[in-house]
Amino acid sequence: MRQLRAGWRLTRVILHLLTGAWRIKFVFPRLSEAGRYAQVQAWAQTMLARLAIKLIVDGAPPKAGPVLLAANHISWLDIVVIHAARHCRFISKSDVKHWPLVGTLATGAGTLYIERESRRDAMRVVHHMAERLQAGEVLAVFPEGTTGDGTQVLPFHANLLQAAIAAGAPVQPVALLFKDAQGRQSFAPCYIGDDTLLGSLWRTLCSDGIQAVVRFGEAQAAAGRDRRALAAALRCEIIALRQG
Image 1: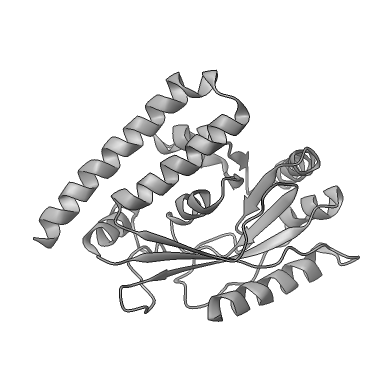
Image 2: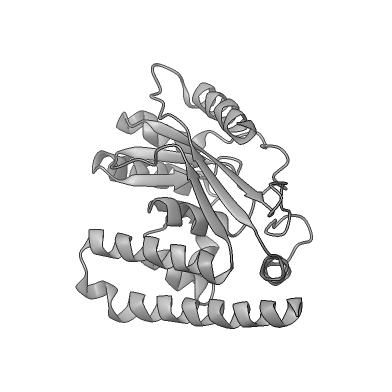
């Protein structure tokens, strides 16, 4: 029964992915930017429902920009979860743009892409991020730079936080957790080490009662701190949010 239920969920997930790609191609061109962002958030909320995941939001998502969200990173699901709580522009590695279907969805959601191995491209993205923040947008980054198993928060890379400092925009810490029906940590959505995307997806589809918890902390101004000091403070705050 569990595998039959997972298969049914998978069918609905695939249909929802295809519907999202269709809307990006044929509906998004006729919408305002605000209209597109509202559609992305609604699509993400429906995707979580298709996966039988309950969204729990603690704290106050930003009502408007400029603000940079900084979150810990556990799973391929993190972007969907944050979009469901509050639409934002994510910064993602450039090869995602070329992934079948996923690249279409990511680009339609407003993702900014970065060549992680290129310092010059990192500077380009920081400047672009600063421009978007100065225009009043909400951006999001995963300063760990990779996924962890959710039991701890990895050290933060500070480079992209420079955009918030340059733009004079606050940074808001966001803590992500996945729990099972008993309130314990769920490892089903994890995507680390030898995990494959399909394997992680199937584990998630086979699990019941998963809760995706998003905890928004208080936005912080740099207040004279450099990006490394700001990164360290944000990491400590996210650790505290996860424990709270």
